[in-house]
Image (cartoon, rainbow, N blue to C red; front, side, top):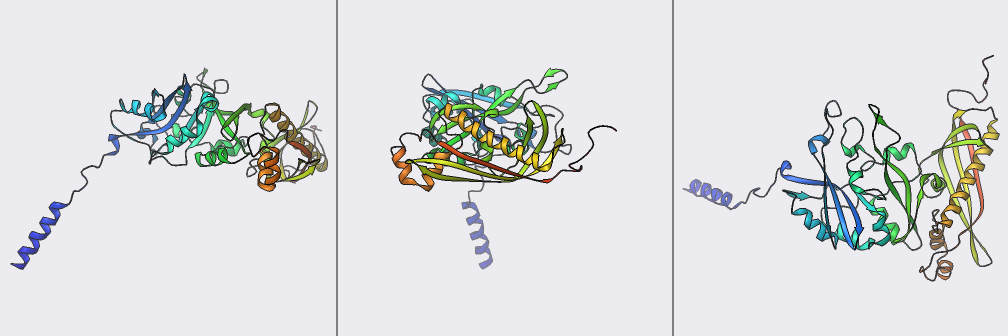
Length: 386
């Protein structure tokens, strides 16, 4: 009798369990991986990209036998939430935002939109984290979202979703995640360089037909949330020595129009000193790095190559500083250094942060380069066959 009562109790308790009645299968959910936002006529245009996850999954060969499928949705509204709700009307299935890994903002959003309000609306979705990469662009977002990588690989293998590999090989403009972007645009006196995402049709061909590919072609300069200017990558070469010093970079040495050598710099160390002259701050820059010789086109002594490299780095820093201030942008982020080290002076010169520190005076720039290795060849070698 006791055993029968025990069995009846267990069965009764099991009947009260709800089970997994609301669980959805993976194929019954739409996964948004990228979002692009435009602003025109006081309305937000929202583009979302979703992928076929069967093309994202790894295969034994590492790539598929056909191009990955990509869907791009578009909707508009007076607010971001209104546009997203409009998208929901045709998504067919439940939407999951937890795989969002890329955010693209057009130059119209950066110039005219409520940037902080827009980001605030986006990250209030509990599934969205602070880890997506964020970019600016002056291209059509639909074009960016439909540009595919090589070898039928998933778009997750493109610069849009994985910019670190490309940056490690060509470290000029550092990619930025949403968390770091939000921190920088809220910091007093800080200039944020938002990478500019573009499409090039001039580098690659497939079967003699142009094959467009994504690229980082410059950066949008923002002082806090205020748009300042777009600058191409070739005018920001000096930024890599002050703003992001974790990566080394290649430096082509030349005298006039004559090429001499190419060095790869590593272990860069930069120190910015602030001195006051007539009540105004002057910024002095000291740079040190170790170099390895990659190319040697003209025989020079090690000391001569080191001197030429130091002068070219000094010139890059000065040129970038000058170009930035011609565009009213502190691309070397010198004002923020003053805010951190001498707040009373910064507050006095910027009216409490309401106006930028203008101009930032660049004083002595000293770059020291030490060649540690010449590669497989010695520094001195024959330049003629006999």
